[in-house]
Length: 508
Image (cartoon, rainbow, N blue to C red; front, side):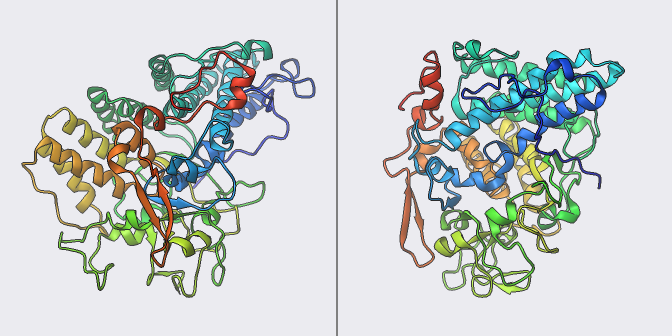
């Protein structure tokens, strides 16, 4: 399979970090007068926008963002990581995700704006190519603003490159204004993106899918269904027949993938860190892992039995939903022929008793930071569940929505579990849907957004994190979850100190 993977640029076209969230053109960088002279220059600039997606505080940490939820625990010595978000211990001076998600998303936005302002000046580049590059950049700018809106609420809307002084006087737009711009950018992308593209590049299906998720986050259910219809009209996407195989390297780029973060084996840190941070089994045999995130008992307990019967306390992994063993490495299971956690171990898993199997290559040797396995940001199983949720929330054709959920539970060759009965009330169907999303998309980085948009935190937390021997390690949100505060990250102190127009979020 042909894969496009973006090198980290040592010479960037005005894309360097500065003390504020915007990247201003410095004197020692390639300037407009010496750039934008060929299609190769434009491609370099476009790749620079894509490259931001790979940052760990954008999408590069993948399913590790389940540590922000009751699904997983993250072990880290430094502040501002996903473990503090998931425990309700984040504050405006935390650093890490608080600062870096803001900084990196605006880095991508500034790169996008810089390309949009200059690409028309490139000689000997066809109008068709310029239109395509613009469409990809509109898509990417929407993705960055999407993450900002979900993380911080209303943020400054920057649609052109700014000087340093201009960047220090901007104000936050309302959250509604940000979402309107997100949809406007997706609409621009939809006009020109192709149905098919090389791996890692934006497509028409990706744009409709990410637009769908933006509507989902804001409970715009009719719009969700419209986007689902557009995705299905492409005739391109379907459930992959094997849930286990869906996350294996040999099957990446399959028909379930709408939008993926592309990686490849080799130098220049082009591979993902999933094996190091998730499972920790970087070599074929005999390695203790150095991962930082692992699933916890609270997630394991959420998996049903195949036939709906009670879980056997004497043999708790017998007769369980196959997705448990396809997603989680648990005691008594084997990985690369070795028994966990006796013959194979991982650092965080030794504390909580489990490790992540999903997105960890089992069929080939992988060097640290060089895993070639792509991370699916959006897949068709998610699209089906979005359609079902919209129908349930509209209280429309709930039995049809249950049929869709049952496709997830029965349509794959390796996942066959008891179907959900029809005739449910809206409230009961909602509960079924929310549990199914948690299990189907476990350890894929989706649950944090789900908890926030459902405003479900007060019902979910506090959650205990117990060690492998039952000892208490952490309590997530020990004082309870406050939607008005905890649904957003704080605006970084470092940004407010540079720009007093940035008003802090509630509760920080």
